[in-house]
Image (cartoon, rainbow, N blue to C red; front, side, top):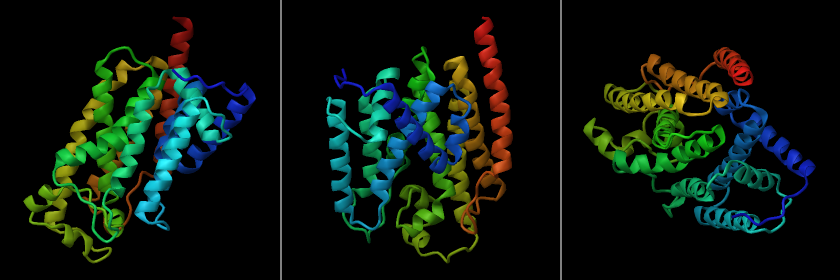
Length: 311
């Protein structure tokens, strides 16, 4: 139970406005889905995103050593827990997230797990040794912490009653993160991060060193295409969970989830249509396509509200 004395509503509203600004500036794919939510839920999602963004920024600050980044994250988490325990704060993200946690009954352990995911990339003490995952099971755990946990937080805000939604939200997060991993293979390799499981690399006669030292911008080899296609098939499998999740959340929130799933799945389709050439250029969903998806989502949102108000 949070015992903090909440700031007045004007301060909370300003805190949410700051989080919305962060999400609008940084969220790329996510923000299009946020727009399709009723305002209280949109505020809460933006607050969670801003919290996640801050943790990611602390973990990814390459101007500081990994040890320094771990210390920074520990201090930030300590400050957050003090806010939860009742300490006053002027941090707009902490103010907004604390309000969202209370309003939507979000378990604070999920936020702790989210931060744990950002620290996994800092577990390797040496910045010269590449970060790797031995098997898909190891990678799944990473994806769970950095993406599935976000899904488990989001469905608390979206609203649901069927417990099946939790496993489906977990697997939806896996689908999204595998899509991100495919898109970012080249960029991650430049940062000495390899999220393609070592066992899968070996099965396709590839190695971590080959991936780290391949010629910049060169198209994928047949072995690389086959490996990336295999990861793409895994992602496609988990997108089925996203489709099954949709009818289990509150009607008013379904358009937002629909937009988010459509945009992320479209990114996977774009990667597949490029024959998994994620090395020559960064693949993305064009803005016009996101806006088309959002337009349909907004129509769905208005219909859901009409049904709710006349039901």
